[in-house]
Length: 218
Image 1 (cartoon, rainbow, N blue to C red):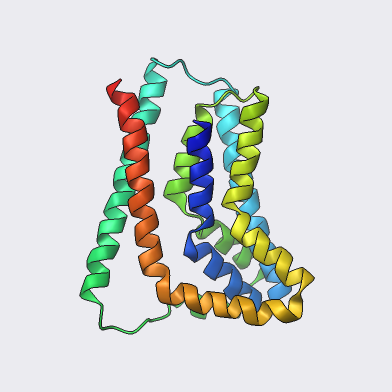
Image 2: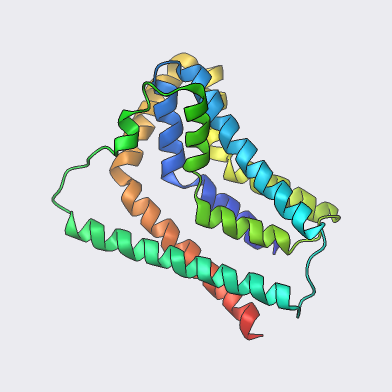
Protein backbone atom coordinates (compact mmCIF):
# COMPACT_ATOMS: atom_id res chain seq x y z
CA UNK A 1 0.00 0.00 0.00
CA UNK A 2 2.68 2.51 0.99
CA UNK A 3 4.82 1.73 -2.04
CA UNK A 4 1.75 2.07 -4.27
CA UNK A 5 0.94 5.47 -2.75
CA UNK A 6 4.45 6.78 -3.40
CA UNK A 7 4.29 5.58 -7.01
CA UNK A 8 1.07 7.57 -7.46
CA UNK A 9 2.77 10.64 -6.00
CA UNK A 10 5.61 10.31 -8.49
CA UNK A 11 3.16 9.84 -11.36
CA UNK A 12 1.42 13.08 -10.38
CA UNK A 13 4.76 14.91 -10.33
CA UNK A 14 5.67 13.96 -13.91
CA UNK A 15 2.31 14.93 -15.41
CA UNK A 16 3.06 17.70 -17.95
CA UNK A 17 -0.20 19.70 -17.84
CA UNK A 18 0.08 20.95 -14.23
CA UNK A 19 3.66 22.11 -14.88
CA UNK A 20 2.66 23.84 -18.12
CA UNK A 21 -0.21 25.56 -16.35
CA UNK A 22 2.04 26.85 -13.58
CA UNK A 23 4.64 28.25 -16.01
CA UNK A 24 1.96 29.97 -18.11
CA UNK A 25 0.44 31.56 -15.01
CA UNK A 26 3.90 32.68 -13.85
CA UNK A 27 4.59 34.28 -17.25
CA UNK A 28 1.22 36.07 -17.33
CA UNK A 29 0.19 39.47 -15.99
CA UNK A 30 0.50 39.50 -12.19
CA UNK A 31 2.50 36.28 -12.56
CA UNK A 32 4.08 36.24 -9.11
CA UNK A 33 0.75 36.75 -7.38
CA UNK A 34 -1.21 34.37 -9.57
CA UNK A 35 1.43 31.63 -9.53
CA UNK A 36 1.20 31.64 -5.73
CA UNK A 37 -2.58 31.35 -6.04
CA UNK A 38 -2.16 28.46 -8.50
CA UNK A 39 0.12 26.61 -6.09
CA UNK A 40 -2.22 27.38 -3.17
CA UNK A 41 -5.24 26.04 -5.06
CA UNK A 42 -3.32 22.87 -5.92
CA UNK A 43 -2.07 22.30 -2.36
CA UNK A 44 -5.34 23.14 -0.58
CA UNK A 45 -7.29 20.82 -2.88
CA UNK A 46 -4.81 17.96 -2.49
CA UNK A 47 -4.57 18.34 1.29
CA UNK A 48 -8.37 18.59 1.49
CA UNK A 49 -8.76 15.30 -0.38
CA UNK A 50 -6.28 13.61 1.95
CA UNK A 51 -8.02 15.04 5.04
CA UNK A 52 -11.50 14.05 3.84
CA UNK A 53 -10.28 10.54 3.06
CA UNK A 54 -8.82 10.11 6.54
CA UNK A 55 -11.92 11.59 8.17
CA UNK A 56 -14.22 9.28 6.22
CA UNK A 57 -12.27 6.18 7.29
CA UNK A 58 -11.40 7.39 10.78
CA UNK A 59 -7.83 6.39 10.01
CA UNK A 60 -8.75 2.71 10.27
CA UNK A 61 -8.07 0.52 7.24
CA UNK A 62 -10.80 -1.95 6.26
CA UNK A 63 -10.17 -5.64 7.09
CA UNK A 64 -8.31 -7.50 4.36
CA UNK A 65 -11.24 -9.71 3.34
CA UNK A 66 -14.00 -7.18 3.94
CA UNK A 67 -16.52 -5.96 1.38
CA UNK A 68 -15.13 -2.43 1.70
CA UNK A 69 -11.65 -3.58 0.79
CA UNK A 70 -13.04 -5.50 -2.20
CA UNK A 71 -14.97 -2.41 -3.30
CA UNK A 72 -11.83 -0.26 -3.10
CA UNK A 73 -9.91 -2.76 -5.21
CA UNK A 74 -12.72 -2.92 -7.76
CA UNK A 75 -12.91 0.88 -8.05
CA UNK A 76 -9.13 1.01 -8.43
CA UNK A 77 -9.31 -1.51 -11.28
CA UNK A 78 -11.98 0.71 -12.87
CA UNK A 79 -9.67 3.73 -12.58
CA UNK A 80 -6.88 1.71 -14.14
CA UNK A 81 -9.11 0.82 -17.07
CA UNK A 82 -10.08 4.48 -17.45
CA UNK A 83 -6.40 5.45 -17.65
CA UNK A 84 -5.78 2.79 -20.31
CA UNK A 85 -8.74 4.09 -22.31
CA UNK A 86 -7.37 7.65 -22.04
CA UNK A 87 -3.97 6.40 -23.23
CA UNK A 88 -5.56 4.57 -26.16
CA UNK A 89 -7.62 7.63 -27.08
CA UNK A 90 -4.49 9.81 -27.10
CA UNK A 91 -2.62 7.23 -29.18
CA UNK A 92 -5.40 7.20 -31.80
CA UNK A 93 -5.62 11.00 -31.89
CA UNK A 94 -1.84 11.35 -32.08
CA UNK A 95 -1.64 8.88 -34.97
CA UNK A 96 -4.44 10.64 -36.82
CA UNK A 97 -2.90 14.07 -36.33
CA UNK A 98 0.78 13.35 -36.91
CA UNK A 99 1.10 15.94 -39.66
CA UNK A 100 -0.79 18.64 -37.76
CA UNK A 101 1.24 21.35 -36.02
CA UNK A 102 0.90 21.93 -32.29
CA UNK A 103 -2.12 24.12 -31.50
CA UNK A 104 -2.44 25.91 -28.19
CA UNK A 105 -5.47 24.85 -26.11
CA UNK A 106 -8.09 27.59 -25.68
CA UNK A 107 -7.61 27.82 -21.92
CA UNK A 108 -3.96 28.84 -22.41
CA UNK A 109 -4.99 31.98 -24.30
CA UNK A 110 -7.05 33.14 -21.31
CA UNK A 111 -4.27 32.82 -18.72
CA UNK A 112 -2.82 36.29 -19.32
CA UNK A 113 -5.89 38.10 -18.00
CA UNK A 114 -6.64 35.58 -15.27
CA UNK A 115 -7.78 36.72 -11.83
CA UNK A 116 -6.36 35.51 -8.53
CA UNK A 117 -9.31 33.16 -7.94
CA UNK A 118 -9.21 31.85 -11.50
CA UNK A 119 -5.51 31.00 -11.08
CA UNK A 120 -6.31 29.07 -7.89
CA UNK A 121 -9.14 27.30 -9.71
CA UNK A 122 -6.79 26.37 -12.55
CA UNK A 123 -4.46 24.77 -9.99
CA UNK A 124 -7.38 22.58 -8.92
CA UNK A 125 -8.65 21.88 -12.44
CA UNK A 126 -5.28 20.70 -13.81
CA UNK A 127 -4.69 18.08 -11.14
CA UNK A 128 -4.37 14.56 -12.64
CA UNK A 129 -7.68 13.47 -11.15
CA UNK A 130 -7.65 9.72 -11.94
CA UNK A 131 -4.25 9.36 -10.26
CA UNK A 132 -5.26 11.61 -7.35
CA UNK A 133 -8.37 9.44 -6.89
CA UNK A 134 -6.22 6.31 -6.91
CA UNK A 135 -3.99 7.91 -4.27
CA UNK A 136 -7.00 8.77 -2.10
CA UNK A 137 -8.32 5.20 -2.32
CA UNK A 138 -4.87 3.93 -1.34
CA UNK A 139 -4.83 6.27 1.67
CA UNK A 140 -8.25 4.87 2.65
CA UNK A 141 -6.55 1.48 3.05
CA UNK A 142 -3.77 2.79 5.32
CA UNK A 143 -3.65 2.89 9.11
CA UNK A 144 -3.88 6.60 9.83
CA UNK A 145 -2.51 6.17 13.36
CA UNK A 146 0.71 4.55 12.11
CA UNK A 147 3.75 6.82 12.00
CA UNK A 148 4.96 5.12 8.83
CA UNK A 149 1.61 5.69 7.14
CA UNK A 150 1.57 9.37 8.16
CA UNK A 151 5.10 9.84 6.78
CA UNK A 152 4.08 8.07 3.56
CA UNK A 153 1.06 10.38 3.16
CA UNK A 154 3.26 13.46 3.70
CA UNK A 155 5.76 12.17 1.13
CA UNK A 156 2.88 11.49 -1.29
CA UNK A 157 1.69 15.09 -1.01
CA UNK A 158 5.23 16.43 -1.45
CA UNK A 159 5.92 14.14 -4.41
CA UNK A 160 2.61 14.95 -6.11
CA UNK A 161 3.33 18.68 -5.73
CA UNK A 162 7.08 18.35 -6.22
CA UNK A 163 7.42 19.73 -9.74
CA UNK A 164 5.23 22.78 -9.02
CA UNK A 165 6.86 23.42 -5.63
CA UNK A 166 10.33 23.20 -7.19
CA UNK A 167 9.46 25.65 -9.95
CA UNK A 168 7.83 28.03 -7.46
CA UNK A 169 10.84 28.07 -5.14
CA UNK A 170 13.24 28.41 -8.10
CA UNK A 171 11.26 31.34 -9.54
CA UNK A 172 11.47 33.14 -6.19
CA UNK A 173 15.13 32.45 -5.45
CA UNK A 174 16.40 33.03 -9.01
CA UNK A 175 13.82 35.27 -10.74
CA UNK A 176 16.19 36.38 -13.51
CA UNK A 177 17.49 32.92 -14.42
CA UNK A 178 14.23 31.09 -13.90
CA UNK A 179 12.25 33.07 -16.47
CA UNK A 180 14.24 31.82 -19.47
CA UNK A 181 14.76 28.34 -18.02
CA UNK A 182 11.08 27.77 -17.27
CA UNK A 183 10.07 29.14 -20.67
CA UNK A 184 12.38 26.62 -22.35
CA UNK A 185 10.92 23.88 -20.15
CA UNK A 186 7.38 24.89 -21.14
CA UNK A 187 8.21 24.77 -24.84
CA UNK A 188 9.82 21.36 -24.44
CA UNK A 189 6.78 20.07 -22.52
CA UNK A 190 4.40 21.42 -25.16
CA UNK A 191 6.25 19.57 -27.92
CA UNK A 192 6.32 16.29 -25.95
CA UNK A 193 3.30 16.40 -23.64
CA UNK A 194 0.94 14.23 -25.71
CA UNK A 195 3.42 11.37 -25.75
CA UNK A 196 4.28 11.91 -22.06
CA UNK A 197 0.64 11.90 -20.93
CA UNK A 198 -0.05 8.83 -23.02
CA UNK A 199 2.77 6.82 -21.48
CA UNK A 200 1.98 7.94 -17.93
CA UNK A 201 -1.59 6.72 -18.52
CA UNK A 202 -0.36 3.38 -19.95
CA UNK A 203 2.02 2.77 -17.05
CA UNK A 204 -0.32 4.03 -14.31
CA UNK A 205 -3.31 2.12 -15.68
CA UNK A 206 -1.41 -1.15 -16.03
CA UNK A 207 0.14 -0.75 -12.58
CA UNK A 208 -3.22 -0.11 -10.92
CA UNK A 209 -4.95 -3.01 -12.68
CA UNK A 210 -2.20 -5.54 -11.93
CA UNK A 211 -1.80 -4.44 -8.30
CA UNK A 212 -5.50 -4.36 -7.43
CA UNK A 213 -6.64 -7.10 -9.81
CA UNK A 214 -4.39 -9.47 -7.89
CA UNK A 215 -6.03 -8.36 -4.63
CA UNK A 216 -9.48 -9.09 -6.07
CA UNK A 217 -8.47 -12.54 -7.29
CA UNK A 218 -6.86 -13.53 -4.00
